[in-house]
Length: 313
Image (cartoon, rainbow, N blue to C red; front, side, top):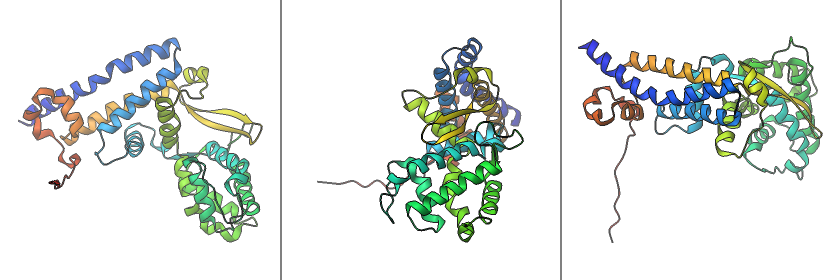
């Protein structure tokens, strides 16, 4: 009986995951020919997103589902949970350039868009007066520390690391700030930096800058040559006349394809071991026979529901 249940579940999962076969074949062929980099990025990110959404509860946001799924099943947990220091350095440099617009007068913060939110929370939580002078000192001090402690701009020593776990990153920054004239606010920084470090985790960047911009935007800045030639993640050097040189993380086609393949295989094994599958995967896996496969439905993913109120008259 147990063996028969295993075969039924295995067949259902084969039917579900076979949906992704054509995407994998097409992406592999385009990568081999080094053609259509944006389309390859869209294909791989969309399929990762679709699998993550099917694996999540109805209440989970798309971002939360994507980040959790990739971190749990993508085979790069340490990388995905680490901060890309070059991307964080860029954010500080960009907002240093934008500072006069962000603080139009002492004590007042101006929000241009949600891009500004992590920096605004840094200013609010650091414990310094909200002035141009104090905020400039804060940003410049943090930028200097990042360059001293990590590799975040082109032509820095190769011995310096480009990624670091959040706890270690905060520890090194706080320790360095304690040796500056901002030592009095060092204890405030772990909480003040929380949103900024979260937004610059590799998996969050993959979701926001690559998944969202490739699917919802007209295009995305990408080094097409390195996208196809590299096999892992890489850092692309960039320069601005306004906020200087910096490096930003990019994800190669081979890396993303590998993530998709690992996610499918690892998550498939997880479902086989658990013996239960989420509703969306159940629907696609069992199709017209879904009622006969209810024993395999993972009820933890079903919405709670509630009373429906009718308005009469």
